[in-house]
Length: 353
Image (cartoon, rainbow, N blue to C red):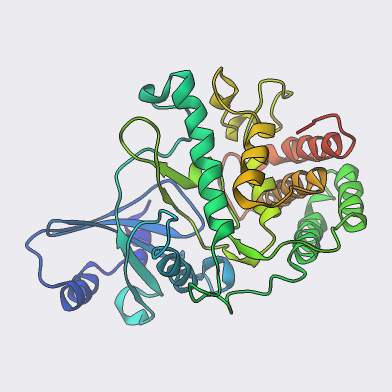
């Protein structure tokens, strides 16, 4: 990261003055950029004896919904009053004179985000089972919330959410194909898109949805047995169809019986080990806890993989146009067709729940 980029992320003096005004003076102050690379930028801040996190959009981005951190703060502040675990929100700021964008501050939590492997302390069958249970139990808590009661009644338009998802990702793919189809075509994705449009459920439950709920967007407390102590990355949250959340979570959850992953470089596989819950067990637990039925499971799992393929194809277009030096992006030339083939296997029942 260049010094110039960091300076575009944060004006340390202006931020210190703002924090002092709202949180009181501090004798220790430090700012560090978190490198994990999500859509929004994350900064770790030490302010006296408090460990804080700042979320802001990337510099230069317009304030569209994909980077709306004030919206993210709003949903977290509402959810923080419930039994859904989130970091404690501290303050939000829409004054761009401070660090050049909207931003918000929350308390920093300690624990593990499970990306590449399980922590050693979880490497026992009972604890492994609990990891999946905690993951799906927390999703069920989100879906059980009374969004009107917590002040989110106007947070989205739940009716028609699933149809809009299909339409939106079809448009994203069309945008990518304008460039990528000169390099190679992915006819399977056109077929998958047609199948999704023909099979959109007529109706669905209306709940708060996270929009990007998966194992590496939650944190587990630094203890045993496994306890999920935070849900992160609420920037895609809205009111919509809880089954889309469940399908997305399941698209990242591996079963021992699964074929080789479509994108091995980005696939977490430790939940294939003995003791971890199967996707069927996770679905049954979600149904029991929410009182809902996971109808049209092939549709929702296919939609999730279609969205993953859409992301990959957009990455591939950016690579072809010279707009990214990410080493994963050129690999999407082969990885997106592999995702399309996976989506077709789900449709045809060859990759069962």
